[in-house]
Image (cartoon, rainbow, N blue to C red; front, side):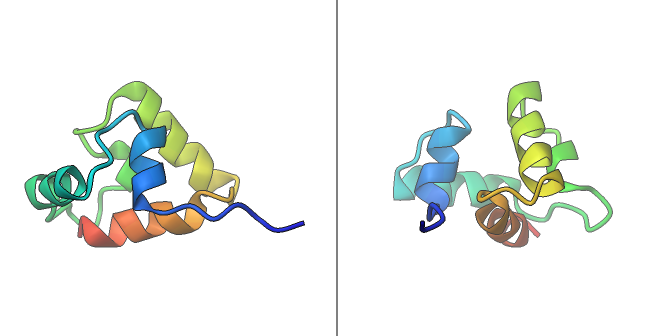
Amino acid sequence: MESPTHNLDSLFSQLGLDSSDEAIDDFINKNKSLPGNVKLHKADFWNSSQASFLKQAKDEDADWAEIVDQLDALLR
């Protein structure tokens, strides 16, 4: 059985955000420069549900963890 493959589009959809390429680029440009000492799920631009999902994905090393890491890197 293959693991699900997720990309930024599907992560943004999962988070309830616009998943168009333009919207993703705008989100990253608006929110980049996240300080290194702030965990991704603690960033002030997430609502509580989004933050919870991101934390759970990392804590449980879920199939979303890799793309969450990619988003984290893009926001640094």
